[in-house]
Amino acid sequence: MAALEDSGIKYNGSRTGVFVGVGMEEQYGVSAHDRDTITSYSITGCTLSINANRISFVFNLQGPSMSIDTACSSSVTAFHEACKAIRDGDCDQALVGGTYNIYFLKIYYFHYPLPE
Image 1 (tube, rainbow, N blue to C red):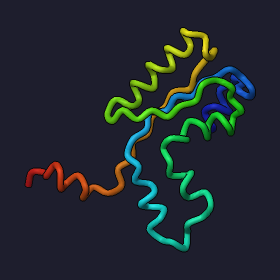
Image 2 (image 1 turned 90 degrees about the horizontal axis):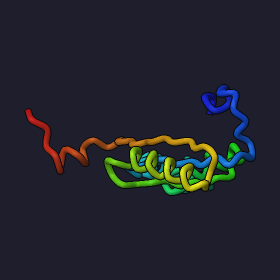
Image 3 (image 1 turned 90 degrees about the vertical axis):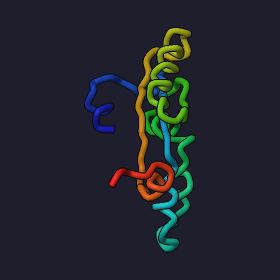
């Protein structure tokens, strides 16, 4: 958020699209581990489908807003969709990002054993 605020660009109310490449929905497992810490925001905070929408909401961005999960190509696909949206006139500018968090490595040891 600081990068957007410090950029000098007036985003509020602009036709700015938000495209976020996402993957691995393990945050819910971390957040729901302790039932005493679950709040009304726990589910929406862990839902990958609304990552881009949260950014659009906070900055009052009026362009398309989508989270994209295409496995390992999520971020590059988000970039591609942002370029298309600008070219097609759906937005004047776009924010593009990506996130892929792995919290539970033992899941991957089962499928892809590491050499000893």
